[in-house]
Image (cartoon, rainbow, N blue to C red):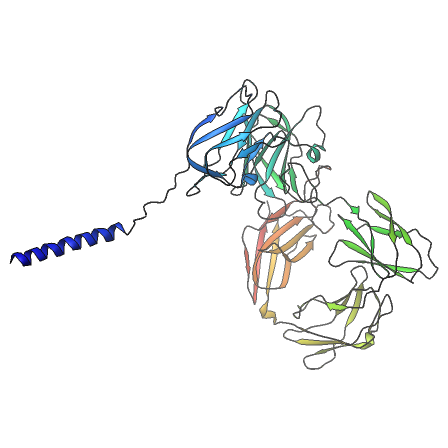
Length: 534
């Protein structure tokens, strides 16, 4: 009996030991740490006045890291050279700021760290920490509020800088290209609003930049810009809206280059609509030339005949407010071979023309060598039209739904600028059923004409557009089903295109309005929308 009892007690004890061991081997995990780090002290203290040191230390209650400092940190006014901030990429219980710039007298400085300070374990951010000091007797305490929009697109960019330039005896409009601002802030990535703080009273120019180079100066090639036409006066209770846009780059012709036999590429920046190329050199009487637009690059291609034995050619290039003389070295090079390709894919809408593009300027077409047959092998009549600048032939013909068309071009249909001729070409295009597309009608209310009405995809690609100059409904027919935004551009100058603003000319971009709902265009449907403009 005693032996049985002893065995029972032994088994119970062993079971408890095993159970306890098992429990100890299964961690509960506990709650995740979501507490941000805490600042213990700063040396000198935050919001110090009569600041004279060149080093700042900020101490925390736990190990921290600093991340994305280049995007997150805003120093206002900017310092040049920028201060050295440590640690970067490693953990520490304090941040050190070493200032090497000569600080301005009687000026309030602010370091806005955004959410760059995080704890070492869980990356919990210390939200929007600001370290502020003044080299004078007091801290400037005024502020300005506002928000950023995009002049053309539905959503503005992230990390937009908002800059204030003081209006004083040294101010000029060109200051934004050369000098850093007096004050700066940033919208970061989570909001379109901004707040400029610790300002002193005065008059300022306010601009916004999508500052791609992070240098706080406007670079026309890379940066979006927005500006207020009038200066602002601080203090103010106003809330300011700034519209961002891409300026049209100032026109500039780059050095032309002979890129193949008798073909010179004239590269450019900006708007080339009024660009003209004039040959100044003496050439033979039978000399002739053609200019076409390169389909892939910002350049005009200058083609010439016949071959000429010269070392170089001299040209005059002009545009609005631009004139320059440019020299091109000439040497023997192999001429391009004729290549032709259709612009459209195999699918062709009923209202579309079939378009054919060549890499060498078209010189002539023999219509008698072109045949278009439908799926029943019936000949289809057509007409042709040549866009000489784009070097595209358009073939217009009547099409019916759910049909296919075989387009054959026999040898020597086309002759190019150099006398090359094509081999046999065969293309097939198809039309879909009308029921595969959707139609919409739009009626505008309170519109100021003329306007450009656009259907824009969710990827900001223009699917269709109509220029409209009267108070009548606008129809979009045979639209590929999908979701679209409806956009109205108020074409103030009636040139049938959207015009961005210009800072130096103090011209704001043309007004743009979006229909408040995302359109769902369905196949085999006719939808009607009323767009009430404000």
